Image (cartoon, rainbow, N blue to C red; front, side):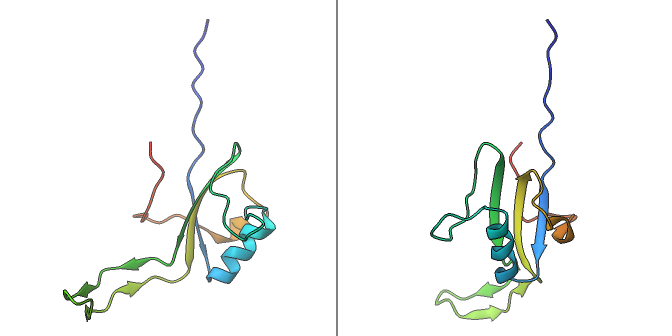
Length: 103
């Protein structure tokens, strides 16, 4: 008997120009429920909606901004599965991803 090892799919990171474009891409791919909520997992995919990425910033104990955070361009998500049509145009390969899939 030989042992077969399956290679997990490569995590793919996506940056859409804005939330409307990202939500439209999810809808076109059939990845939204009837209520417009993302379908986060099925037997054929896994989806991690990140949205805007915010780095840094400092607030006092009352929640007042001391140092403004940096908001990165785009609306972000991570996706594993067969690549939906047209998504390749939004694929990015960050050097330091904000979130990754567990190993």
